[in-house]
Image (cartoon, rainbow, N blue to C red; front, side, top):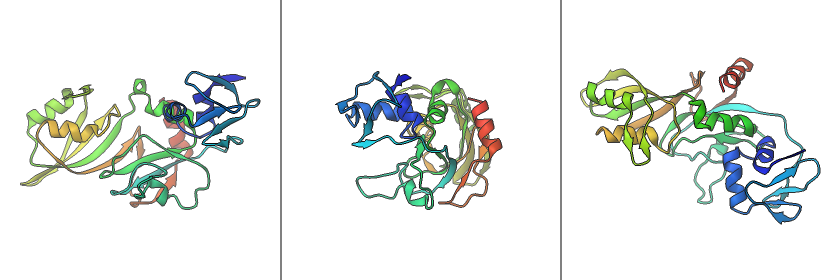
Length: 237
């Protein structure tokens, strides 16, 4: 049965649909020896589909895990500059998996990884408004007006953010601790929101995605999602 090429790549665990589109646009995908184009359809059982010259093999069993990403590594399985990547913390995982979404170099916390491209695409799609909660330490003490602005939406260069949920955790004379839940996935969104109200982020840790908790998982460690967590994640998409 013919399907769009990016859907086939997602099902095969190569990448999410969004990342698969990038692979096609970069000319890294071929079908029966010819360069693939966006929108192209193929038959997984009949056609020879290659990524970077390697033939897509039989679909592997689906794997779902979370990693407590440490600060100082990039959310990628490979870095041409030789920087630490999340792959360095996945010892024992032989299947080809990839991160769902991003945490920037200076951020840490909960990161989902899988070889289920369909699930990854659903989690990342804006229409699902997946809640993501961060524990944040910021420079200075936020005023009630600042928090109200965050909750209503902040005007950034790429548009106004959706309303966020903000919870005060504690404060000192110099700093504030907050929990912020957002429902989008813009690049460095939380940092930009807080900078817009005049407060630099000193520490950012994602602690929850759609009810999946980071809990006491040590930094750099990973665990598999429980069956109940996976059911809940899929049910709410």
